[in-house]
Amino acid sequence: MKIIRIFSFLLLLGAALLAAAGKAEPVEVLRQDALAELRAFAAKWPQGNAARAARAILKQEEEAPDPNRWIGETIRFARTAFRENPPQTGNDEARRAAQLILDYPLRVEDTDPAVPAGFGKAWRETVNSVYQPVCDAMLDEILAARVKSGARIWKVYNMGFIVKTPNHAWCHDVRSGDTVTRRFTPDQLAKLVKILDVMFISHNHLDHVGADLAREMVRAGKTVVRPTDDTVAELNGDPHLRNLYGRFGKTVEVDGLAVRAFPGYQNIPNQEVPCCVYAVTADGVTVTHNGDNQSMQPYELLEKAQVTPDVMLANSWSGFAPYLAAGKPKLAIIGHEHELKHKVRGRDPWVTVYKRIAEAGLPTPVSVIDCGESIIYPNK
Image (tube, rainbow, N blue to C red; front, side, top):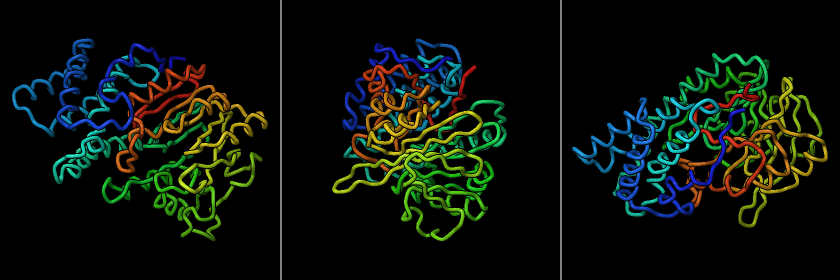
């Protein structure tokens, strides 16, 4: 199976951008660095639409430099490069190069402490202008997709994923945006409800709880599995809510899915927030999702229960190496990079994710994908 493989020399590309997560860079420095990397990309892979897009950006900036235009154009370049080099079948090196270039515009709002008034709003609108259509295209693709065997897994955003097997579809931690980053439209919510059989929520933090989707799911008579009763508490008493936190790995049937919930937690100041690591089995494939879990207990329980995940959906920021080593999945897909609203200083850009993967030296193949992209398991 052709999965993203990490070579240390590739980490040099874009390393000057963010040697450590959260390093502040003025917008103009990011712009100049992005242009340099676009020039290198077009020189190394001169054929195709991505190279043409890179050259067009460079020509524009040479003839009429603009401090803002490069942001949207660079994001669109990256999406073009991803379409030309899809996960599993495209040129992995070109994909990584495009992801590292994408670091520059996606870190702008977070990195420059002296951005002009109103710049943040303009930045968000620019990012939304790219990713809203990505979301629409992804939902249409999922609706049309026919999975004959195994599973196909789409990354929605952050730690939100949708899994589809021949007979089932479910999601983990899929949430809407907010008034700034745009909520799911009514049409998008309707498509999600049509796609999904079950919705899983790992823990009660706003960047993981899709309250609007949960409301629509229960209204349609579909199941929402939550970790605690204070998660989407407005729906308490609805028969379509399930709470599996205390089951400690006992197999529970949920609408045709075999579900095991392994209790863990996320550490925040003066509090351990309950966080479920769900292992969901359908059509012979087991997928685990670790939310923001920072405890080893779920993985020890996984091993004790002799559950070997086929796929682990692992967050990037909490140091995923121990969890992958303990859980022993056959494939890992990384999430929680580049949060575009819930910004935490030091949250991971792509360059940090690749650095962590390389340092971990894991035998598990690791896939790094952007919003709207998907992975087929197993990749035959």
